[in-house]
Length: 173
Image (cartoon, rainbow, N blue to C red):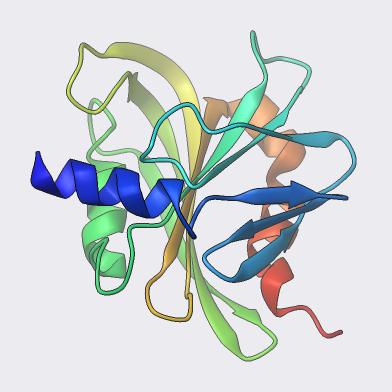
């Protein structure tokens, strides 16, 4: 409980996301997003920001959810990749890439299969033929984690925009 309160305090204070003109600021990083995407208020203290995009083939808008847990928190890349892959009913078809963002390494995970959708500690609903895009973006004192899930075909339509989004804090100015 103390950890949750600490996370809530961090999210509520200086680490809350600020959106302005197609930019989302999370943990000192400015993420640029396309005009077809929209920033919405986070729905829980665990979220540092949320972007929504309406995509043909998805029942509801897809959400790219940003998480930032503070200095030294959130675990390493391998632990997070393993956790994301573990959210599938059986091992998904997956690929982990290290993207070069102007000299900064950004980790991108793409996984497709039967995704167990639902809150972390709540009941899960299996979603067949779903894709998860997960990114681990290095921050000043801890990584920012970004996760987006949805129907495979819908996610495929925005995967290039997601790649650009996760590299955008390091774009040449």
